[in-house]
Length: 401
Image (cartoon, rainbow, N blue to C red; front, side, top):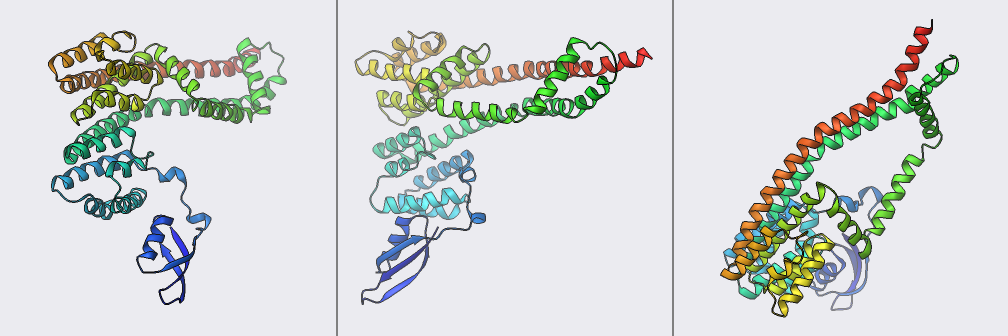
């Protein structure tokens, strides 16, 4: 960002000009370092074509993975946090992340703990990430903690990438299907309706339905845009409410096939978060509280929050989770119980992570193997029905001559 400034020197001379900095505070600190007394500071508004859209301001997950790996290596060399962040700011290619790192350098130089500095950017660093850093500061194991974080984020990134990759084909099929339907309804059927109006034949129910649907959609085509848009806006605001998200999360877990798949994902996420946090030295109650905030489902969040309260009163984790067999499967509870008895809960949970991640991959592969042919058959039948509705009256006209 660029700022126009006006200032006075020590001798009282008026000085004005322009300075570039990542934030207003950064610009002030920079000017003060030159022994200037600031009297005015205004941000220069960039022309509309040079402004960045917020959508493109996102920092890719892969960048955070690389950043964490680099932090682990540099802290292992016992370099000070300020030097570490300053060095990485020069290496990072993503402009948004670079700006945040430069801002972090100033905060750390000012005496702010590293974990508190990360907490200032919740859109980039999750509560899980911040608490892990806080644990590393308390135990003096920042290098190990950032190694854990890099490994954790890498697993999350690869899993999300695989899920998105498997959805490309179904989305492509849906797009092709909608394009075919659109061509038939908006271009083929209007021509057919004029042709049939001149012919005296009795139309089938399927053809009459297609002609009526085409006429309605051509007259009220804007509903195709307004209804999905309105539904999306409603869901966006409703799902931001606690009640809305809780209702949606609960319903999703009850959907056949998809519910079991989601449960495996959440159990894998709970295992991975808890094992990483406990390995990092966080107390179990605090590890449960952090995990509840990053699990991503209100049902599981409520259960884990209750578990944290029960553990604080002396109850075991496994005993509390056993009350919820629908959400926490017997194998998961048993592995937690074994970890509690042996005093190696983090190791036991890591084994659970491996099991459920493989289970999720298997279920995802099986789901896609069933989904792809099912979509092809479903879309094929719909397109076939539409084509039949078009071809039958044409055939009737031809055979009537």
